[in-house]
Image (cartoon, rainbow, N blue to C red; front, side):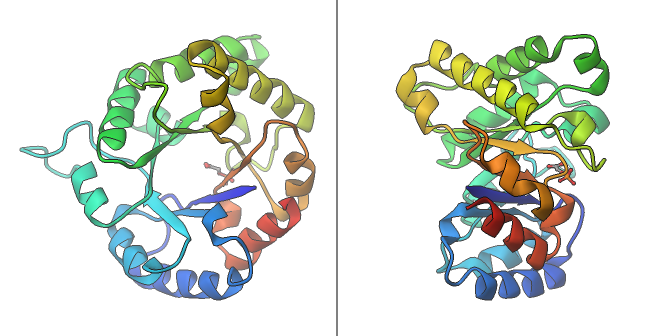
Length: 246
Ligand code: PGA
């Protein structure tokens, strides 16, 4: 199981250094290639320095829709590439809801990421209102297909299904809900591309994943790993999720 940690706006460069040094020791005997961390942009250079030579992956939480120019305060994927990042997290629900990120911008960021040879991790998810209105699958389908607008079948992406109502709330989606959605997402990938694209695309679940619920969720067919917020901020709980799900 892949364990990806989304740190959001937590961990300075110094805190990143001490966390990652601890993680390297804790993951020494584990499959390091299954770990991904997403530090805040200003801590990426430190992550690059500490993780150099290890198999632990790291990436940026967001990039700009443009690579360079007069765009004060933006983050260029070219610079992210220079720091040897592996992944870019794209379309997280906090970006969509707090920063008004649109499906079109998500599609552009996915393209820019692939153009740099980096791997996009595309986040999709329904709100509680949408779930209660029975719109979950329509919403997920339109978010996923929009984000794949500029992707070809020879390229590689990762998809993270994160129900918005389960993020940071302690309310985790039940195994049956996750099973239903992940089967649905796999089918969309088969229809849009083909079986081999769908089979090689990791489908992660995110939303209040903890050491206590990881084992149950990991048993769900078509769950290839987790995108973890709060519980990824301590090495102990992050590692425990990996152990409980592998
Ligand atoms: P959470 O966050 O694990 O704290 O719910 C998940 C996420 O936002 O990616």
